[in-house]
Image (cartoon, rainbow, N blue to C red; front, side):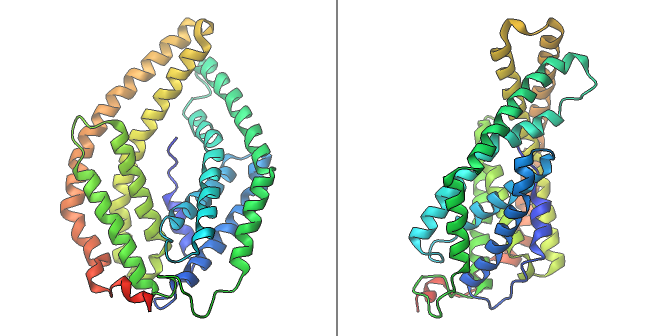
Length: 323
């Protein structure tokens, strides 16, 4: 299930206090310490399972870290980077099932009788997912990952790093990485046709999310008004893609319910399922039409804004960092 979390990432950015002339590895440690603190703050609430927002915020920190690690070749030692990437990929997977169900259950209105069997079915699935997540968070694998991460962040940075980009000026590094993601978004979106598979839009949504996170990490390096304008333009596109993906996932849940409950589904509940699926398909078609127009506007009118903010040719070549 798609979780609209970009505003939370932006709110967190104000705690980073990144400077234009910071080394990249120094800035990364600042961001990572913030994410580690966020995970530790919300961990007990995730285990208690009383408020879905604890897991939501925990996952924001996990996803933020995964996006950051995706840009860290030449900044973090390779063995450390590989271990952290694997660990946070695992964390993303083990927290997905419950969060998906948390969000999906919010779409099922509690007062509707025809949705009671569907809601009860997925409430049980949610309970099972929570039990599994609690077990995973109590496992040695989780304990060792968090200890390894904390130890890495507590160790002092070398005065002279041999890593390719570790000592590179942060502003130049941010421009390069953000601009590369902008180009990926434009390339992926421009290739989407009316008959493109839903998975293609999902991949674009993921690229937009990565771009949004990178912009949030380094937001303090850029003029506030221009950055806010760029963020707003990107968020509009993300919202559309997010709703489209939500519809895909919700239909998958309805199909799963029909298959697993089988003959035990009351006729009125089965009718409600078919009605919901029909409405979702119509909304899907409408969103595909809206996407074509919205992305064309984004590519034509917002491109210049992103180019002025992040275009990499105004910065030094990253290869100079080797020295």
